[in-house]
Length: 286
Image (cartoon, rainbow, N blue to C red; front, side):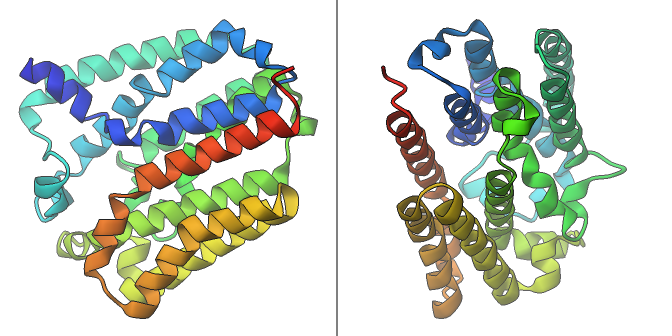
């Protein structure tokens, strides 16, 4: 049972919606009716981005982060510190997931969706693994977090042509993902600096990194307000911009980790709101 618990814990269950949510939102934006959700490919993809994809992503991350995690109190207080005695099991499961990924992508009906999936695999591995290890490269650490929105793009391209993809909304989602990454890096500044890992947050320092995070969220909210709905844009800024602004102006660094732990709920609420909005805007229940 302890082994099964480890297999679950390493996949970060609280973060499952970060990949599965964009897949669901991408599906609803590509749908003409709620009946489209009967697609077997959609449900297989939803399962894949709930557990296997997260185990793949965070398993590689934990395996590669021994140099920083030993300095990070978050790994003792909020997350489990990875034990390298699990290496053999970890790589066996990752290999199995990689093989299943090849089979899964084979059933994608469009070349565009297959290409996006390959890009997702590239960023998911290169974010943590050397020699690229984007997480330790200035600006590329946040830039590479496009991987979190790619499930939504790939499922959209399974059902819709590339010409129908809204690039402003892709930009909004990408900037939001960059903001999410930079904010999550704020509590790690001390441990990353101790391990000599040059992240964007370490390079900028707490105050400037928080300001850049606020800028990312503001741009994402503005694009959402212009290209989707002004009230959704306002809600987005309320959920992400206002708490970040509070951190910036009050300079209460201890509150960052408190807010960080609330982001899974905030993201779940925001994603569900967007999902429901699309359903009713386009009468998909009919």
